[in-house]
Image (cartoon, rainbow, N blue to C red):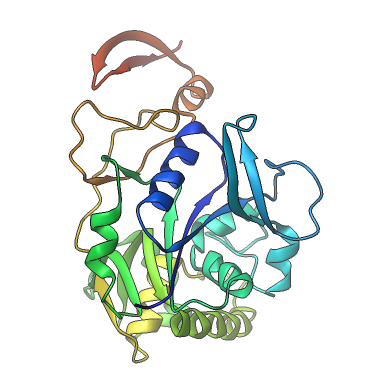
Length: 296
């Protein structure tokens, strides 16, 4: 069996995130890492090494192997500090637009694996285990496994294509969806070299509003499938949830063993900032679902 690492990337620590990570960890014999975007110090303290075994919730959850990612680690890769716009932005936006960056960091510190599974923190398996999911792919040697992998039509209006002509004007282009991704070790190395090459080219264009740094969901499949690597769709599609918060207690009344995304966080806080007020609620799947109207 190929040696595989599973990691969940998160920028928040909540009961839902930790419980979902433990579900991943307990679903497989693969090594599992919690990748924490710690550039805002959600895990306080000074650490000599980014790899730490941490306890959570006053010791109720113990000895979780974590990778504490921060600005210093990011800068060591000499990767472009671009996202949807060409000017310098927060690292949070960079990592959202360039999900492949997480693979470069995790492989540098954990280089001994053949394959690397990435899960977003807002992915939810509505069941007790991911074991059936992992079993589907344990003998699959594709360099890329990802949702929604497809060739892009010439007349596509996919927003991520916008302003990508500086690199992909006439090339065959492919789309993907990144909440769950697996990459082979050679694919990760190749993609990192390509990002550095693209950085040199993009320097000529970064002041132009007509060009934009390429999102991972376009960059990864297009580069791999145009350069001799193999890719397949993840067989189980993601189910989408409405915008209510399951980040604290992720459970439905009837487990269906399907995988859902996104599991939004801080929904009530966002509504408050948008000047909505609570009007009516109903009980749905053991949750209070609120109806809101805009405040005057």
